[in-house]
Amino acid sequence: MDYLCLAAGPGTRFGRLGCYLQKCMYPIGLKPFLAYTIDNLKHSLPLGTSAQLVIVIGHYGEQVKAYFGEGDSRLKIAYLEQGAPQGTGQALKLAWDAYRPTDPVIVWLADLYVPPELFAAVRAHQAPNVVTHSSGLLGESDQLRASLSGERVTRVWQGDGDLFDIGLWKLQPQVLAAMTEVKAGGEYRALPNLQRCIERGAQVGWVKAGEWLHLGGTQPTPEQNVLAVARRVLALEGLA
Image (cartoon, rainbow, N blue to C red; front, top):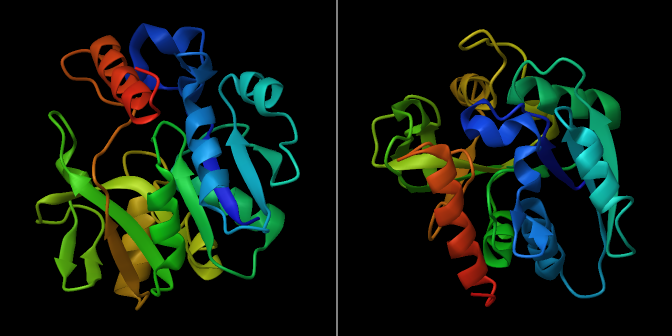
């Protein structure tokens, strides 16, 4: 497991769109949203290398499996079922239990658009754990604010800085294993558990993203956010 994508959530903030679609499978042009990021991941890999991606699925997971299958020779894809989703932290712990990686794993939320250069920057960062930050969007939760001290992150959850965590991380195996120690809002969320790891001494660096494009926004409505993200992704991909 070199890369891990979390695509199990029911998309409660996705509004009516989530009643028939896995959020990451929303069509953008002629491909589902997640396909653009997976293609970007492949484009970011060093020449002559291949990798293994595990996708954690749940809500409408059959849509994800039907489209992506087993991947290809460049990027092999496997699936891990999160039967009763209890948060992103639980999904990370499930992946740890199933695969027991020995090296850091790059993880992202499936409703986030990640360009190739951001994957490459996180992979190349020298810190053992890395998070990505960007300026906040209208309506984003202040719980996602980070606190920074130079090149280190001192708080990834409920910080006091101007930047927000966007959901692309590089995490050590021991951090993945500690993702179900803290509950927040009735579920095991990744960032509160990562904060606990920081307080125990985990070293976390950060990368700033140029922009934050994700399908979970609700302003001014979930549908209008999806439309704005779709237009921007098509522009970035040279399709608009």
